[in-house]
Amino acid sequence: MLASSHGDPLIYHLQDGHILFARHRAGRWEPRLLFTYLAQIFRCFNALATLITQAGDTLFDDDYNIQPNYVELIKTKIVNHVGA
Image 1: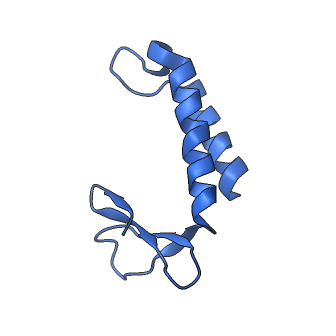
Image 2: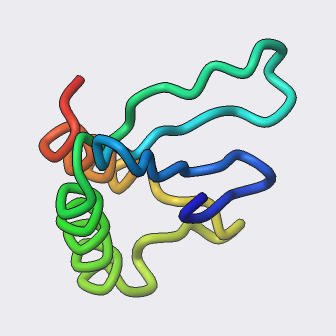
């Protein structure tokens, strides 16, 4: 396991280098392909970190939710690195 968010793991598959994701307590345990190789996840996270850094305080609204325009930009960055 590389990391987890609220119990949802990112899993590194040793044999093929894929990064898998599975939801915690989603019923059946069926990890899904998220990234095909480790460098892909790093490039994606780097792109997201750059966007977040450039956005600064404008990333969040008054309730500390991510602004809708940034949600769309984040989704676009992820799709550019992972696919639809």
